[in-house]
Image 1 (tube, rainbow, N blue to C red):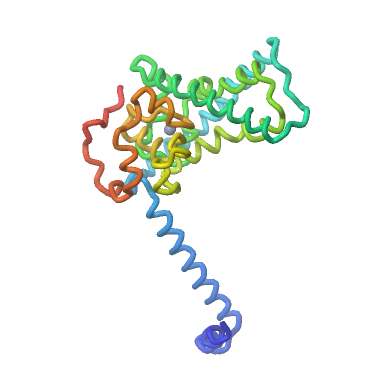
Image 2 (cartoon, rainbow, N blue to C red; image 1 turned 30 degrees about the horizontal axis):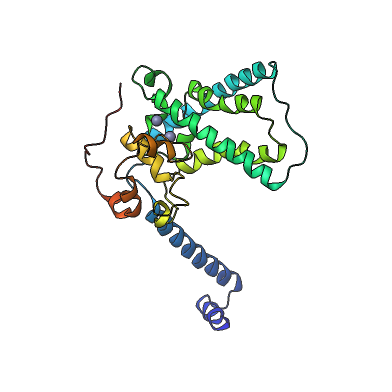
Length: 266
Ligand SMILES: [Zn+2]
Ligand SMILES: [Zn+2]
């Protein structure tokens, strides 16, 4: 270390500040290199990003978040006036939190899958879900680029769930952020999970970024929001999803017209 520092000092003519800048520059360059290589290798659709799509989605997201907020606040207000389960402010043990969270997770996944399929039916699609499919290569903003009516359909689950189930505050702390974090994760455009994910019996039931990315790319497959369970049961999981997941090089190929790529309904 001392030798390297002496070398740097020698290079900069004994100027300590300049040597520190040089170290910082080298470290930053190294970090950027790692990060760029790290992310580049994990990009699902390397040529998928379009600035124009991103700009449009920024506008849709801004309008959508405001509209969704108004609709969901109205729904929550209406449901609060109905007789319902009171929020449970008592302390809960960890296994109660796990049970309540798991119940929410699988119940919402079921709700999401079936409403998602309904939103893909030709009569409903243009009015509710088409906006979210603006991107065929999703990015983080795609998460929020949603028609307020769609937020109403998906977001409506939580107030209804809380009307029937008295969830502990401690469980709510985990349930609350889940949908936003899952949304950001599946639209990130990068696959961070290990290759064995779909080979392991413990993990293959949970969706990956590639899974939802392919929903945007191939449109008629992979409807699940949290799990692959309903898609596996109903035969709507894309047949090449698992092989594509394991073979990132396949992602680098040109997006050829595939027999299972269905053009979105107008
Ligand atoms: Zn969809
Ligand atoms: Zn999506």
